[in-house]
Length: 216
Ligand code: MD3
Ligand code: FE
Image 1 (cartoon, rainbow, N blue to C red):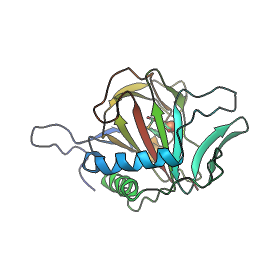
Image 2 (tube, rainbow, N blue to C red):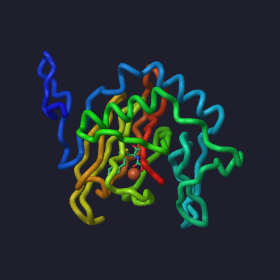
Image 3 (tube, protein in one colour):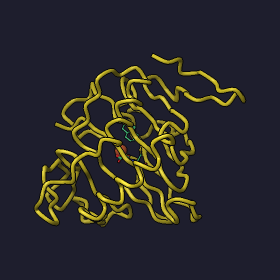
């Protein structure tokens, strides 16, 4: 495993431990940026971003799509992993090789060998979109980490503890940042504050987040 506090030649931390089990890999996605963005466009053509409805009847401000063998969906009946896109009734687009390479490499750099995600949930934030504090607990295996990749406009990530009312820290996530959430951090509450408007040179007025999950 690489040291979590390696620094580059200008002394910028490359890898930072946010909390036990949570590693921030600054810019880790940048070497694969072109391949990731090209694959993202193809996925969004085959399975367009949509605003899903929560079981409580609220339409999410974040638009979502998925790739891989299963995709995370919500509707009035609940949250679940579904092998098909409910809008088209077709399987989700395949996980692109560049996505898998990125997710496995990041997990390995954080000390998780052989991470094999089935599912990649893709969140699209336009200005004002937010994700309120929640836990990710629809996956069967909490021993596997979740790998998240931030693209486009910077987002302010909130992360709390294992109880909803635990104190919350805020950290900025930038284009190319990758975070590996495992071990004691896997079930922390987390969310994203409303996206500030801006223009990213590659993605325009949006933030996109990929989360790789061992769902099944
Ligand atoms: C910490 N996505 O899709 S990524 C989600 O930026 C989600 O779109 C946010 O929360 C986003 O469920 C945050 C960072 C993240 C993802 C999963 C986690 C942090 C996590 C699971 C456990 C603990
Ligand atoms: Fe989450």
